[in-house]
Length: 325
Ligand SMILES: [Fe+2]
Image (cartoon, rainbow, N blue to C red; front, side, top):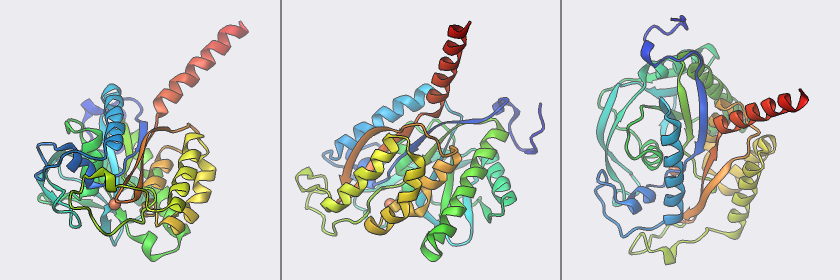
């Protein structure tokens, strides 16, 4: 076996070279789980937010087909003041309650964590000069952002996960400092995936525009009351989504600071930039599976199919070689 410097890595799970198969922008309004009525969630609904839930169903099929070893998710609702923290308990179980919407989300979670990969991420992040820590408290209550994104992408919970906290630097320091941290964290994540031989999915648990209504209808899932918060905010979302669709990742990175400023966009927490960095800022056009509002916020479910793009490129190269013979 090749020594990659990670003593705790299970040799059975190591392939010659790890890689990121795909990335998903996977927003986490608890309303989506509430609308679905899974057995793990206590509150019951009459449905709601179907276009977003159907978008997630398409992602579930893709993920099952890819058979990844692990799903890594960066969540804005696991906030840490000092450094970047990684879930590192082999099995986590408990009740997670959304503090703002406890009447919508009281979820009994149970998940397996890829601890060797979490440890590798911590090592790589430390090597790049970041403060990175292990969360190894056996009764740690996992935040609803992590759980909603993971549930919506894989409700069977049959794939190990690594949860990553959102360091609060975007809210204390300048945009540039905060995003630089996320770029390094993404790079560290990619290196850890490669060195541990994992076939991984990366997930950014972020809503787009985030100004929202502060009154809830009597029936939260009454879709006659659901609307975009403002035309301005909607136009911003469409501008950003269009850049994703066209694979214009450099322009996307350029526009993000203004987008965050104008719409209080949740991408400020860094999940999207972490994911783009982990994927190497791909020029691959994102597939947009669906867009919808939740209490007025803008949510897009988007996929960067890196392995599909790589296979297509290999095919094109082979065809070109055949034509030239
Ligand atoms: Fe959120």
